[in-house]
Length: 192
Image (cartoon, rainbow, N blue to C red; front, side, top):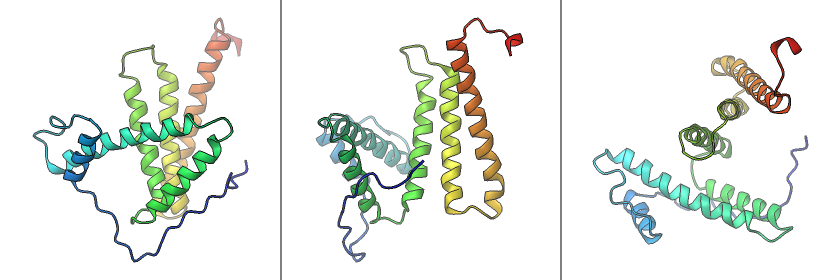
């Protein structure tokens, strides 16, 4: 697989002398209120860290939806360009923080894993537990691999490698079994 950049987008990151952005709870509440998102009951009675996390997660969901809509609704032939431009802008903004792209990506993978877990509890079409479990295991492996990418040797890496391999292997077997069940529904254990 080729991991070359699909497109080149130049984004000016500016100098490192600019202050790092700090977002306080009141700013997030104001932003959500301006978007018409009801936040008065959100985080009521909790500690300030939980309140901040809930408000930022709500803003993340709204902004994520807007970004997704912008990219998937791009005119035919512009989706890749839009993805690349958005990714480059996100990386430039991230450079204003103390977080590396790898660390942020690992956080987002873990966020996705939490969202996958929530899919199993939502009403609607019958969830496929094996596929959701495989997706969760795969995201766990990706998170571990991103940590290993930053530090492939050492004490923490010693358990990381087998964990990633095991999770990928289990995910593969879950997906393979589900696929076989769908494509060969009358298969018995003696058919192998």
